[in-house]
Amino acid sequence: MVTKSFLGDGTFGDFVTVPVAVGLAKLPDNVGFAEGATLGLAGTAAMDSLAAAGPPSGSTVLIVGATGGVGSQAIQLASAAGVRVIATFHTAAGKAHVSTLGAAETVDYREDVAASVLARHPDGVDAVVHLAGDLAALLPVVRKGGRLVSLLIGSPDQVPAGSAEVVPVVANPTPDILARLADNQAAGTSSVSIQRTYRLEDVPAALADFSAGTIGKLVLILN
Image (cartoon, rainbow, N blue to C red; front, side, top):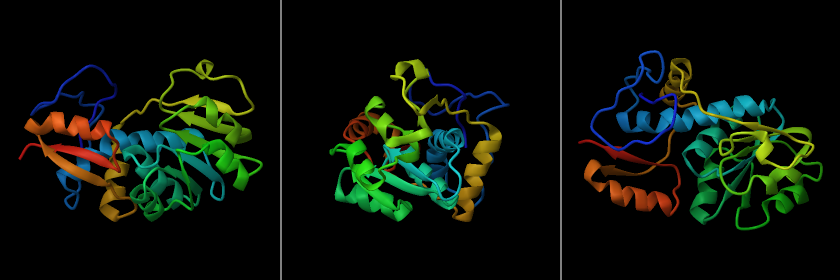
């Protein structure tokens, strides 16, 4: 697997350069290149988000943006750790997807997510993993002393003060994390969801499909 330790302007191409000390991990023999391509950034973001949330076994976590690549990994990793997952969805296919991955409860993100969750959990949930939508609207969902982890903000100051601890996360694809993700895939502990693959010349179509919303990941292949 190959990824970089930062996000920035770039393009699509046949080759990429990465530092030797970060972003590289051996792909197990029973994991394909398309699967490996989906694991890098999405899997790292999911693993880092859950580490920041710190939910112990038996706790409850709401994952918002659950049908995407990061959310799909986060559901599986949390469920495998004994955490009860509430996952957002939109379509019937999305609901089936997150339920199959291990979500114990689901909520349609077209509804008032906070109100729906609090109706079932009046004291709030232990943590929220925020991957999409309005972060501030989710603050009431977190119990006092809980954590709201987000990949979409750079500082807690971007969110109104509340009783929850707001933790920004920047995914850091270290070789150790990439190796753990690859081992999970090889052992069947978690799996990637590839909605569709595209050839390099079909990048415009891939971007259009991505903008329309996905279940899992879209992958560019070179052959």
